[in-house]
Amino acid sequence: ENGRCNGTWLNMAMDGSDTSSPSKGSSAVRMRFYNFNMANSAAFEGLHHLQGTTGRCLEDWIQEPFSDGQSCDAVFLTFTETRLALGPWVREYRNNPNSKLDCATYQNSVKEAEMTNDMPWSGMLDGVAEKYNGNLKTLLLFSRARFRRDPDMQPLFGRLTDKRIGGMALPNPKKAFMGRSLLSRQDALHICFAGAHFPIAEMAAVLDQIGGLESAKVIMARTLRKVLRNAFRRGILSDNSLLVVQGDLNSRTVLGPKGQVKDILQEVISDPHIQAAIRNGVPVAEGDWFEPCGETNALKLPVTYKFNSEVGAHFKGTDGSALSLEGILTAAAKREDDGAYAETLQSLPPDVLKSWSLEFKEANFRNFRFPASADRIICWAPSSLARRLQWTFPQGGYKVNHLQGGSDHRPVRLEVLLQLLPADAAGNTAVSATEPPRALLEAVAQDDAEDSEGAGGDSPSFL
Image (cartoon, rainbow, N blue to C red; front, side, top):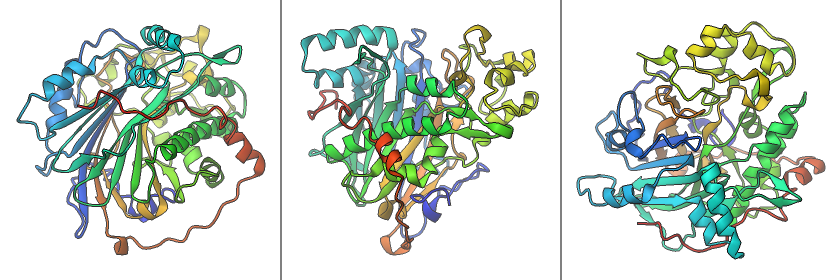
């Protein structure tokens, strides 16, 4: 089992075989996800400059049927640190009568923030910050035959503090989370599709210290708690709600003693005390965060960060999708020292480092810049619902496109077949109560008083 929420219903086609036939007696939703931190680059003028699959335009990939010939029901795209103007693209898209995905909605973190700012100068500061930092934007396309918008549901939105001066949070529109909710027309399933860019400043500081894993887990847990509390306040969480969060979640690789390799997000998800601390005091049905297609072995995770903007020669002429932490550490000389981040990269043969296009600047290197699987998809659901969710990945899980340059991240895509099993077919796995230490509860809830910004109100961007 990969965590309590997934139970025994997690089904991964890691060999890439076609397992996209729904189980008997269940309903199936076909979804695609795309996730790219664009590093505030001006090189991308529109979606037509982005790749979906190898050598193919992102716009073509959006419309492709699944391998069984069935149409996709929903496509969710998250762009962090982006300058893309999505509004004109969406308006043109709506005029395409041939699209099976006949409804489109997009969100813009700066615009969402404008509706929550009480001080008139906040919008001006956000505008300046957007030009310097880039913005968080999402695009959700879906079939009206499969989904409908919930007219009573508020959009999800919250800002995340990354840096402070004199105790005051600096405006940074790219560090936020936001989402839209859809209701299935075929079964009692409510899905909130949320894009996010999690903070990194505190994480970077603790990773500079030996043995910073536990502190890093608490920092990640605080952010997940903020998202959960915000979703609860907006009425998004219910017994039939699935919250999907996609983006640059800024998980990082931790090199421990005796060659141990850990991933922060994996460690948070697999820690029952941390999970209990995240939901402590939030009046929702018992549930956990989980990564549907997540590896339990950090070494097997795909590397999505930290690269040069150029495409590495190693990936040219290939499908551009194969580079794991294991591959990097295998190529490096053996290191047994706790926290030997720079030393590990220094031990890579220079031609290998260059062929993978990994960025390693010795003069200003910090541990958080070590190659990592930063760009991920995680979910939250009540345990009673999570047991009924069967996840299948026809292409074998995350696919990272190393043929798309222009950023220090590489875009990630995921194809999902999600089946909601009948309640009587899912079983009822007993869950033992977990009581975290009081110090952990207090540490994870440390930011509750200030919490995330964002009051109600709808965005004019829903088209």
